[in-house]
Length: 193
Picture 1: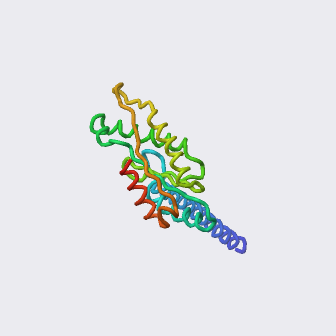
Picture 2 (picture 1 turned 90 degrees about the vertical axis):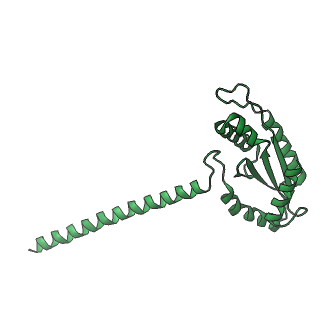
Picture 3 (picture 1 turned 90 degrees about the horizontal axis):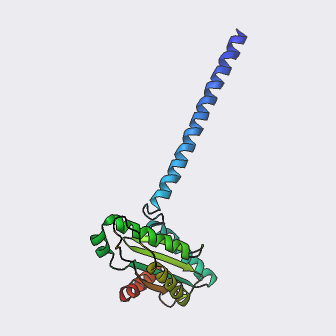
């Protein structure tokens, strides 16, 4: 009977260990899924770039860092020229190809520490820590040139036109001290371009 009660205690302990292990596995799965969903909510599915929500989280950190250490920071807003006409004449699948091509070129030509996001539609934003307005304009001119040279391959459309972009750049300090100021100034310059 002492042996029987010891056996029951070990069986209870074994059942508790199995339940504890199952709870740990389930908790781990929930945490991993939560992280996956957070990543998906911060990314643009078409281009693979971070989205505007991610920009909103990060840009204030970058601006605060630039202020604290006194280094320059610039924001560039770029837009694919005549994108609606492009979509209307070649179709949305061609528009998707164009957006991915622009994103790939941008990713290739910005520095690792720069923040690059798809802002919405055919607009992209680049935040250049440690780069003043003049440097950001030069960087964006290289990007503008590279995008104009992209050989756009649209299935069934050998006549697909090339793309061009317009860009507006704003610098922290001379163009404003808050993100809204910089975005407004970059957007106004984009409109002029």
